[in-house]
Image (cartoon, rainbow, N blue to C red; front, top):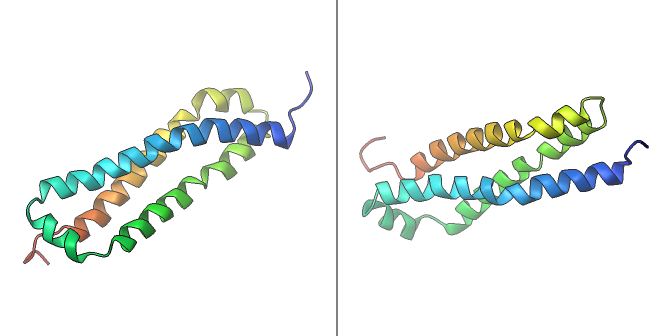
Length: 118
């Protein structure tokens, strides 16, 4: 069997990670939505005054961070651990998504903190 080319490995990484980006974004959206719902009706006034562009910027930054996985994925796929990596890279997805969700939680908590708590 011939060694895969960069093109082959990049295509594999794109197929794997891009199909899972929706899960990543969905989890982060649920975290933010949970804070909005938990803080209702106060969060309604906060949403009216908080610039939507700030939320958009945070969503873009979260997706830029998601792209960091490509460097790791391609590096490991070029190693002798390629077959093991393909079976276990879901762990990176779960860990990275959990980490991003915690960051989203803390940032969103700052947005939707009830008045008088700091």
